[in-house]
Image (cartoon, rainbow, N blue to C red; front, top):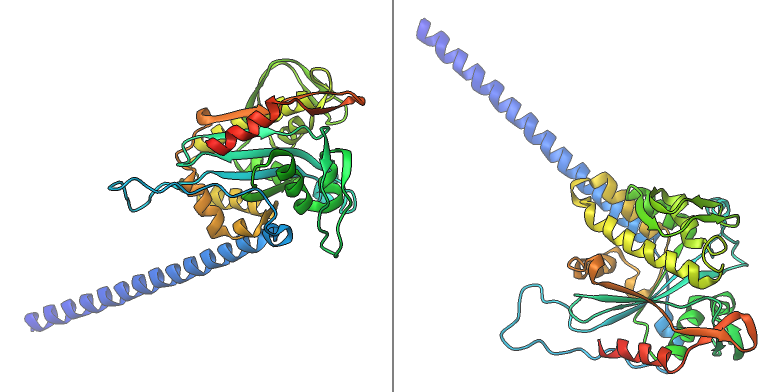
Length: 353
């Protein structure tokens, strides 16, 4: 009798364990399914965030040559070889997207598009270093004829302000104008709007910058004493737009602040371990993709991630920030023109790096 009871008790225990294991297994399976579904939704959402422009198709073949791919030395192949060609990316900061958030931050509407910031980002072959060259928006240039999405094209304009290229012809004309003045092929195009930039800084937990002088700009509404400050997204955007509250009030002073901000953002990104916080990683990715317009070569999350992975060894210390050499325009003391031959020599140097 006792043996029979013990056997029955053991069977009941095994039955309970079996049911418990099944429950755990079903729970884990459900969690995996839900996790996969959530990951799939997140990927589609982030992918759909990105707006793109087919610049290559619009501009055709009449452009500067692409960078030449350098063959890898024999015997150095690896599972994840470093890229062997340089890449040039035209990065614009604009207020081109309408909406309440952009309006609140000082952005324009869709009929008043402006490119407040223009940088040519040159990434060296091998991705060990980068050079960021700012182009003053007040630079007088020859704006080439640009194709329009609606058909037809813009007229050639002599002595036009650089940032009018975006105003009259959007990203395609901005790229064509930069290529015309530099003779450097822009492999990619990236545009970030006001609200997206502010959200990115906030998602990263803010950014720390050091200013050499007091800033008091009524236009950007930024007031900072000289020194080190940790800025939120709205403050960082105001810093990027400040020009009248620093130096001589020209665009060159603002460019200096923007370059300081670029370095600070790179340092903030490198010091933030996004992989340990899925929530923050998603917030950063959502902020980036939600504010982004790219060329069709970077218009998917996969392509952006591949570019990001290739840059994982690039530190802020290996990024050089420069401004295109300019002098006061003879025709207008409030405008500048390229300082030659220094400007051409700078652009030519990027072709060799």
